[in-house]
Length: 422
Ligand code: EPZ
Image 1 (cartoon, rainbow, N blue to C red):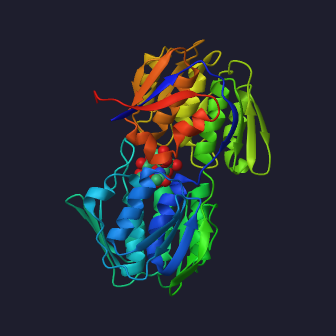
Image 2: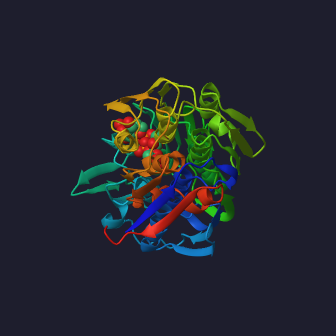
Image 3: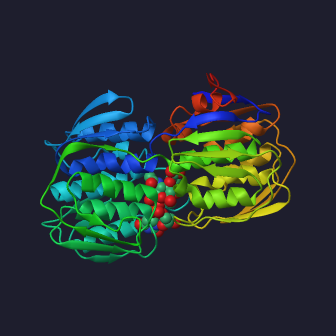
């Protein structure tokens, strides 16, 4: 197995280019199953969640041609079946989008229950509520979800809680339904807008994505025959912004949409670092220890839960005591035990954690417990004195493209090595 070895004490400096958004790409790829045609998608991040999504599409009869490592042409005119292989769908979270897409296209879907980061309970009752409201019969048994419908008829669906996955999945299931579907209390993340823009480019009629009410007028078919570029990844951009703060560095983060990071920017300014917006890049620079700050993670446009571990590294080093309240997931503080091995002083209890800022961190062998925790540990290793090794890279590779090359390009001393012992 591989591990990352980092020699820390570095202030990151330079330019980094952000890839396409993981959480948009893993929805757009299964969404192509709704198209009776051919489409080309570019700015796709080369990450393992994308690779496995594409493998599943091929299993279902789609033909994929990779024009570059980040651009693929997908022909979904001859989908042969609606049964997604269970052993593959359990490897990541976004496999649940296969249900909405196959149900929409074939009026039938058999999909293995999703996997993904271990953040506590991750139910999909709101997805099922939406499918049933549209007229599907849904059964969950023996590790798989079976959804069938004679026809899908548009209706109003009020989500019990703001859910990115349920919002997108109901959008997927309703674009070819008869009549109009209205999703209320919808999530507003940039990747939801991106999926709606993609579907509209393919012939769908979706309005209001990015607000809490999304209206989908069902159409006969999606014809495709066009191309689409995935939105830049605001979570990857935020990860590098926070790396600049933690290391008192100076980074120009290119190919991003600054407005997607307004909440993080406000918090970084509160912590005493500097942020400048350009059209498609953000300049972040810091020359002193971060001020303490309190964080509550919320649905967009609130503070993103997917940047919580990364800002946790900054708060572990801040001047004073900070508190993070995790508003989305039951268990997203597993990374704090790893940071404490590096000299941090964090007490996590349920959905809250108290960060007593320390002056410095020391390198140590640590383990990535989930995708964003892994990114946080890389930042911690770069700022810590001495050597840090990070194992369980499978989590990091699910969501970050060429992560060690990108960090090396801005000055980090980081190598991926094969570890015979693990
Ligand atoms: C998406 O997960 C992202 N994953 C997560 O990113 C992200 O943390 C999350 O949205 C919140 O922004 C992908 O897009 C693939 P939710 P998702 O449905 O869709 C509860 C990363 O690091 N809920 O918005 O699974 C749920 O338990 C990953 O990139 C229900 O109760 O999240 C949670 O408390 C980690 N029932 C809250 O809603 C449901 O049917 C929000 O979940 C659905 C959700």
